[in-house]
Image (tube, rainbow, N blue to C red; front, side, top):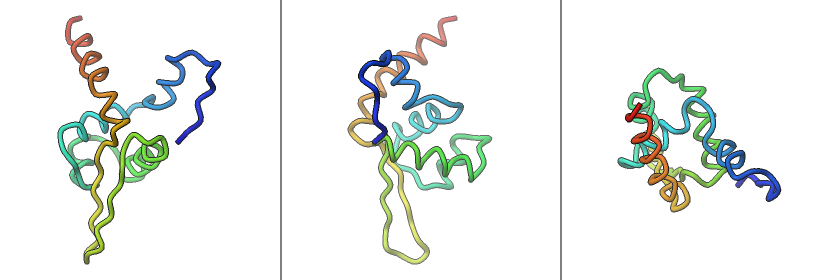
Length: 102
């Protein structure tokens, strides 16, 4: 998990966790259900494999998502939210509600 400086503003810490173009979309999709890589890529939309892979690695490092590998042929990997990731969904829901009121 990324270390957060306790002296920085809470909003700065939050932006470090979920900032960028794709992380909120990924969180929202994974809040609906567990997903495999290709399924997640189609659900998020116009994101490259490379970018999705990068974002998923960062989010796993920050303990927002977990990656479960099934030992089968062909390989199967599922992504889901951790308890920490799930704890941010009410905030994400309120953010969406707020944006829709403009």
